[in-house]
Amino acid sequence: MSQKTEPTAPGTSEKRRTWDAQSLALVAVFAALIAASALAPGIPVGSFGVPITLQTLAVALTALVLGASRAAAAVGLYLVLGFAGLPIFSGGRAGLQILAGGSAGYIVAFFVGALVLGALAQLVVRRASTRRRTLWFFLAATAVSVVIVHAFGVLGMMVNLKLSWQAAFVADLAYYPGDILKNVVAALAATAVHRAFPDVLVRRVRRA
Image (tube, rainbow, N blue to C red; front, side, top):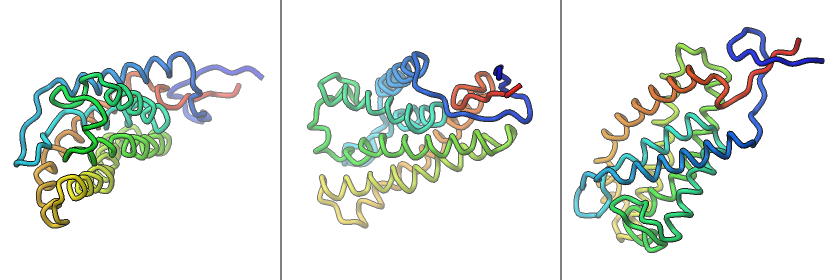
């Protein structure tokens, strides 16, 4: 039985992309993208030391493009390098001491959020029409932002900054407008990537 690749042909079967040289390269590239996003100066918010940064945009884009396992690997690689001492966290910070600060919850949420959003992205690519992908990508990214990223962020501020639940929740609200805008950008960019490279997330194969 022979096989040939037909990315957009109707009636094709879909297989999950296996780990190969291309996957490893994509993991490295997107880990570098997340690190590069931390170089942009953050916008200070309040007095808690948790600025608005482009990292959440880079993590969302990574998840929407790579899917669960490879996005988690890319974010995991970024975190390991940062914890090991490379100054690739926001503001040029590095080391495990960052987990003692107000942004600890958000940093932990990068990994969990990438895993969950990546899984949702795989579902969208397989089941949603090409026309509606941008909307579904945006909804998935926003849901993950609220349920995981912001929840972890609030918890981190409660634990490390000794804030009450109400105070941490109010402090976290300042990040919602920026996250919504970043999710729009990530959804549009991810849609463009999937349009240009239809098999970047799942490999579609027609059985002849």
